[in-house]
Image (cartoon, rainbow, N blue to C red; front, side, top):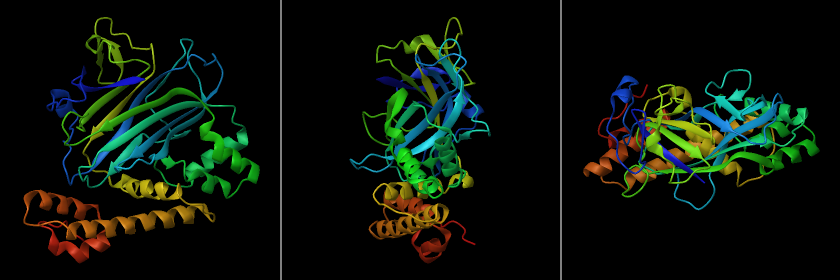
Length: 342
C-alpha cells in the first residue's frame, strides 16, 4: 500500500496529468523527456519510519530497486542502491537519508539510458532491515558490490562476485539472504509511461512516494521543499507518520552512467543462468555480450523501419544513439544526422 505524487513547484499533483515546466524546474535546469535523448531516474532522499527499530542500536539497512523496461511478465532485475550495516534510527523511529556518503556502499541511480526509445518503465522499491547478518556476510556483500562497478550492483551479480572468495556455506546464505528480511517498505510500485493515455506519466521532475497510505491521503496539506523534504503546508514540519522517498526524473546526459543499461541486461541474463569463474571477468564479459546483443537488436529494428516516415525516423535516430561507436560506423548512412564517430 502506498501512493505516488508528482511535485510541481513543490505542490503534490496527480501522476496521470501532464505538468508544464515550472519555475522551480527551470531553476534546476530540468530537461524534458524525449525519444533519442538520455534518461536518468535517481533517488534524492529517504525518510524511513520503522516501528521495530531500537534506539542507539545499529540496524542493517538495505535499499534495493527492481527495474524493468520490457513488456514481459518476468520480474525485473534487482539493484542495490544502499547498504548500511550501521544505520541508526532516532527516538521517533525515523531515519533520514539524503547523502549516501562514501563510507558505506551506495549509489542513488535507479535507471539510466543514453538514448530513450519511448518504452515504459516499471519500478519497485524495497527497503529492509536485514535480519542479523554476521560480519563475514557483510564483508562478502560489500566486497561483491565493490568489485562490480561504481554503479548500483545487481543482486544477481553478488553470489558470483562474493562467492569467488568465500566458503560454500556463506555462499548459500548470501544467495538466500534477500528473501529473509524485515521490511521497512516492503514493496512500493511505480509504473511510468511516456505516451499512453490514462496512465502515470513519465516526465521530468520530482516524484514523492509515500508508504502505508492510500488515495485518501490529503496531498493538498503537504508540499515538497527544494531540499526534498515533505512538510505540512501550515506548520512546515516534516511528515513522519510513515516512510516516504523522493525520486528525480531528468533527461540529462552523464557518460559515467552509460554502462548501466548493459549491466541491467547482464543481470537479467545472470538470473537465468548458473555461472562460475572469476567474478570481475565474468561480469565484464557478460556485460560486453549484452552490449553486442543490444547492437544486433538495434540494427534489426532499424532495418524494419521506414526512414521516410517521420515517426520511424525519430526511432531510427534514437536506436543509432544507443549503439556502441564501433557499430555506428557501419550504419551511419541510414540515419538522418548521425552523431560524430571518432
